[in-house]
Length: 239
Ligand code: GTP
Image 1 (cartoon, rainbow, N blue to C red):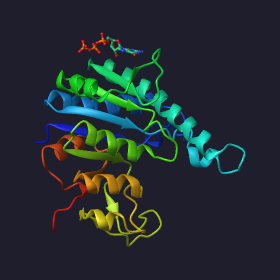
Image 2: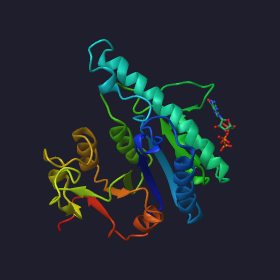
Image 3: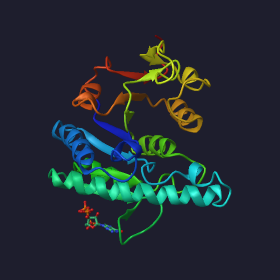
Image 4: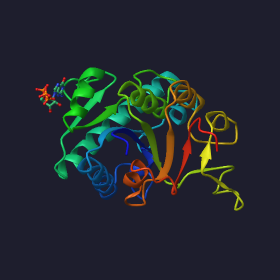
């Protein structure tokens, strides 16, 4: 069983039915899933996206807001989600620290990797906010980077789908789920696991990427215990 993991949630998944904002019922559910990991002695780092509030690329698409400004706005969105998630985790009685890649000491701690590791060793959940702190990077890349920095054994991308498909399952009924992929396969154009920067970083550091459905209760724990039947895994292992 993995001892330390990083779980990445999409911000979009936190959204209410209207497609934006934060649905506290979802927040409460996610936090309860994380609680079951902590109760099993797993050290958990978290990254949450910001797409339920604003996305840099979309904000910049009319050419009024520049891409870099849009990305900083997106990083701020991840801090809002991180603070919300911290509240939900504390609701379940967990110990939590939020660390931001962009200093905002009134709201949360700055990102200091050695301190983050110490928090994890003490059984605290650490939420890494504000992406990498740089524009032109995604929260998937931030999550991969943090996973490597804290020495996580895997990164779990918790999404709305149960794995990686050879084509978009929403558009193609014959789309096939891929249970295992190599990094190079994940880098190919039609496979959407993460952006290339994130995958390349994972490849260079041999960090396995697991993609699973966050809305199936118990899934995260099963994966961490070594059951990979309900997910897709990207690694260097030969099939
Ligand atoms: P230990 O050193 O292991 O006891 O860790 P700790 O995080 O409990 O200690 P510390 O006294 O540093 O922090 C106490 C509380 O203050 C925790 O809830 C931290 O998240 C919070 N905290 C620490 N540094 C900052 C900061 O720079 N900004 C904000 N907003 N909170 C902080």
